[in-house]
Amino acid sequence: MSDRMFGNDPDVMILRDNKNKLNPEERYTLCVLNNILGALVFSSDNVSEYGQDEHLLYSATFPKVIALVDSVIEFRPNVFVVKFKANNLGGAAREYTTYANLSGDDQTIYLPASSSSTHLLFVTDNEMHMTPQFSFSSWFSKQEPLFYHPSSTVTIKSHETKTFMHIPPEDPEKVMFLGSTSHIVPGAEVKNISADIKTENIKLELHQDNARIHKVYLGVGQYLYSNKSTPPPSCTINGDQIKFEYFLVKGSGEGKEPSFVRTAVFTDEKK
Image (cartoon, rainbow, N blue to C red; front, side):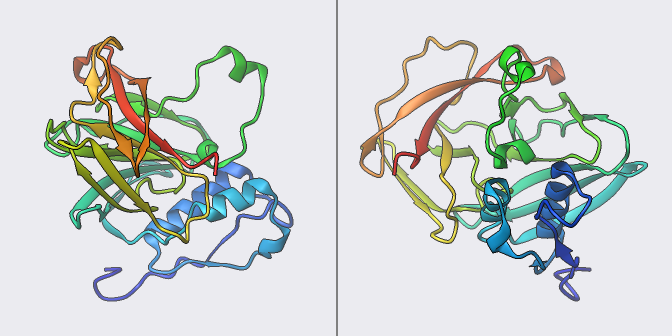
């Protein structure tokens, strides 16, 4: 009944790494669930005492996402799936699925199936909003994939939360938002995207109250390929020539063959 009869108050979120027993995954889970399920968000932390990781996560909550929650289901003991929508760049609703594993064991889950609004899924989790940490395991293993095929399996660690944004099918005449890394709900920090395919110019506007370094992934026309051999188009974002990157899509759900997402990548990291 929240957002219909009243606004849900989930109590404070705790991001600080002192004077509490929550580990980083648990603090991230509390942050994400409070922002998605809460009509308002409070924190009792002294922000001036935050370290770099706490500042990164705190900044990734702005602007406050306005989520229209469709359902919250406990599909295993202490393992929850939250399905919600948030306003898209043109006023339409973008779909999301968040998995929160509050149990003491790692859980293998199946991602949502393909549909008219789900061609791929883009994932964000705690590690995306932390400073990079070097380890021998990360050196020898591949980076956590950003994109997944529908119906694929994913492991959610104990007390971990992952949010998946549903990516619609390709449209050869449109520029499509494929994901971003500067908000706990990808896309909430993007104010507007306008594009003219004929002039190959894209205009991207970000919310000024999100102070993170931004990285935004855009699909220009077709974005899914079986290999990396297709030459990318020439286009600009905010007047600057942009580069394209290919990302391997994880998972083989629904019998999907190995494929790559070709994205135009915008970043203001050098600014």
